[in-house]
Length: 352
Image (tube, rainbow, N blue to C red; front, side, top):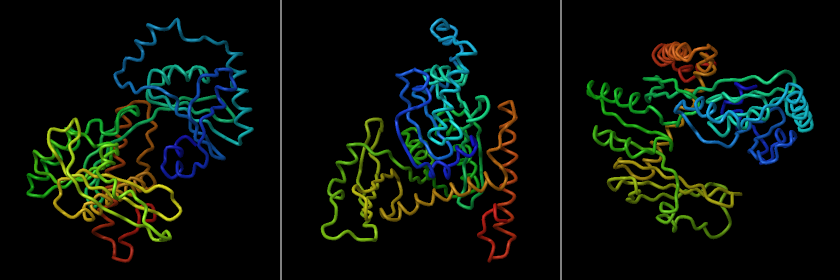
């Protein structure tokens, strides 16, 4: 249940979102107030907290040990029973509580007596004892053919773009040394000015999703007006390109905006892309949207070669295991692309 809950497909199935947490509410800890995503089978709990990847949690805990609550075994058993009763009432089989840093680790002790979970989670089943699980956050780099060019295993509490320099820049240099033209596309996690500058220094074309803000919205106010008349069943799409400079940028850059009006939706869908491409706005958006194909390749890696099955006790062993899985994935992708007949050349590795 825990492994499945990390998949995007499972998260898409979650049907209810609420801000009441029955877990600690049932134990009498009134001010916990964490958001819960609940479905018929599982609940994923994200405790409030800060991200702390410095490894200083143990020292903080020692310095503040006297402030941590200490409960007896009987008290924890009473809390377990209260939580299970609340889970049974809501038809939930498993409660998954993530820990992302100092504050959230402090809160987990009120439920499961775990305070050392820095980048992991506590899995609380309806039957059985709570267990501690460790999360990882791999960084993968794909080319347009679906080959994984580089991979880095990271702790689960790091930013999505953490370590991009050592993964991306050497690969760009290697490709350019072979005389190839390089273009990069990435999601909003890679909207970092230092990344833009590094790519521009190497004359690399890029299209990166840009998080929306009020300044960007003001540049497209004329696009946000809903079309007059009966709503069309076909989405109404508008584009605009303009120059923009954020406070942290040293220079002005081109931003492409896409606004979509869908039938039955009150507000439009708005997206921004920062780019140095000279193509039309529509072409830039089409180029960026191909980034979604990498999500399918990651899904194939999970299902076909068990890329995310990282159950070893040591971090280094799990990193090697990830690399071996990606080698198997690349061999399968190479075989699919070069050796299979055309009618089945587009099949997924899972089907093959």
